[in-house]
Amino acid sequence: MQIEKLTSNLKRKGFKPYFFENKESAVQFVLDLIPNQASVGFGGSMTVKELALDFALANRGNAVYSYDTVTPQNKDRLHQLANSSDWYISSTNALSESGDFVNIDGTANRICALAYGVKNIVYVLGVNKIASDLESAIERARSIACPLNAKRLNKNTPCVSTGECCYCDSEDCICNATLISHHPTRLQQNVYAIIINENLGY
Image 1 (cartoon, rainbow, N blue to C red):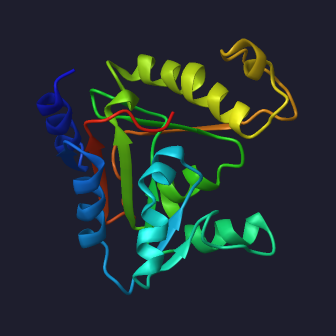
Image 2 (image 1 turned 90 degrees about the vertical axis):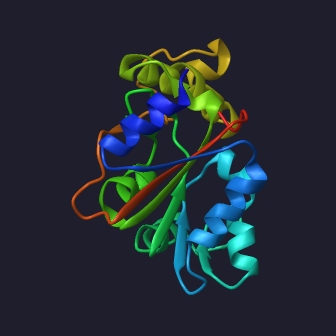
C-alpha cells in the first residue's frame, strides 16, 4: 500500500485527504476543523467510537447527534437530526487505493447522509480499511466488516456463525443497501478523508 498514491487519487477525485501517524493527532485535527457552533451527525461506527469524537465535540459545546450522546424517542428521529446536521462524521467499510469509498448499511441512514444529506463529510479510518482495488474493497466490506457488525448487533444471520457473507435474505440482514462513493456529490462542499496509521474498527 502506498499512502502517497492513495492520497493523490483521492485529491484527483475531489476529496480532501489527510494522513496521520496516530489517532490523537487525527482527533485534534478534526476538532480544529469543525466550528464550535456547528451541529454534527454520526452514524454507528466502531472506529468513531474508539476515537470518542462525538463526546469530544459534545463536551466543548457542539450540538451532536450520535447513538452515545443522545437518547431520542426513536432512532428515526436521531437519524433525521444527524442527516440534517452541518457536518457528518463516519468511518467507511472499505476504501480502495483508487479512491473509492464502500459502505454497506442495514437501514441506510448513514449512506443517505454520505450521499446527499450533509454538505460537510469527514471520513475517519485506519489503514486496515484500505483495499487494493474496488473489487477488493467491496469484498472487504462484505466479508470482514459486515459479519463483525452483524455479530456486534446480535443479528440472527448466517454470517454471525460462519464469519463470512452468505448473501442471505434474512430478516436480520444488515446488507440492505450499498453506496460506492467515487467523487463528492455536487451538493457536498467538503469531503475529508482522515487516514490514520493504525488499525481501527472493523
